[in-house]
Image (cartoon, rainbow, N blue to C red; front, side):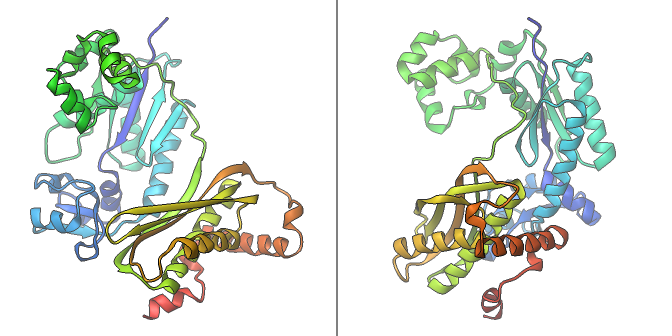
Amino acid sequence: MKPRKILHLDLDAFFCAVEEQHDPSLRGVAFAVGGQPDQRGVVASCSYAARRFGVRSALPMAQAVRLCPGLRIVSSHFDRYGQASSRVMAILHDLTPFVEQISIDEAFLDVTLLPELAGVLARRLQAAIRDQLDLPCSLGVATNKLLAKIATNRGKDSAPRGDYPNAIQIVPPGQEAAFLAPLPVRELWGVGPKTAEQLARLGIVTIGDLARRPADEMARRFGKTGAELAERARGIDERPVEPESETKSVSRETTFTRDVRDGAALKRTLRTLSDEVGHRLRKEGLRGSTIKIKLRWDDFTTLTRQTTLEQPTQHDSTIYDTAAALFEKHWPKGRPVRLIGVGVSGFEEAETQMGLWDAGAQAEQTRLESALDALKERFGDRIIRRGSDLLDSDS
């Protein structure tokens, strides 16, 4: 059997690259995309100039500013990132239908059926994304997903510092184990800090160290995980590229800049989040029967509660009414809330025509929501605001 040809594509500092398109003065500057340091903001992405100071994604913005005192902070614009991501994915689908998008800026491609060498296809893709969209990207090329992903990481790490990597790293067929052998064992999927410590106590520091251990020994010490790690250390990964990832849940959440203990304000936020979830469900043609809320307290502990409806729904008011009831039941009155969220799961596809439960008032609600959805699609989510929202903006 001929070896597979798998590509892994990662858009370099994607949010930053998109922001530079809208504000060219950011090019070459140390800047970060994310929230404000005095409002518990975190770094969503940062330029390579900022990374030289130790700034990185997921770092609290206050700490990022301490590391890089001249750091420019740019607010996130997720609508821009979503549009740019869709254009990138369209280019990938022009090359092959076997595309598995795993995040807004990352995807696997299976190009086994194409006649060209995988490296040639990677360079073609990189050039197309650069020339058509003015976006930098790095690619890993290998015979499976595990190796392609690690190849991307290694290519980016070995690129010259200070600018977008635009790296392409190729692992030739038959060289999988040799490529992996000198790398730290932490490079393998499934090896976190605790597992790495356990392996180090056994003298296993590199992936090559792990590959030399008998698979049955690893299975005996670590169970199923050990057996899987032994396979991965040898460069074995049979997982297919899965073109479609079925939506399992739709959720929205928000983290407050300051803890909120006002029940009315929290319920207004629940209403807004429920509207956003309902809009997404209707856009994807889904109804869900399980409604869940998420509450994070001021001590960072998190509570989740859910309930199942008799009929699946995609209506904002049903989602909100159910979420509000869960909130009333499980929120100790006056307890400060740091984060609040709403989610819907347990999906079935929505009917294109109204079902029995859409009669009467439900039918009117469906027509109203359709009209509001059309306005949001054309002018953005903020074009529609409930009267209750004005209470927050005036306070």
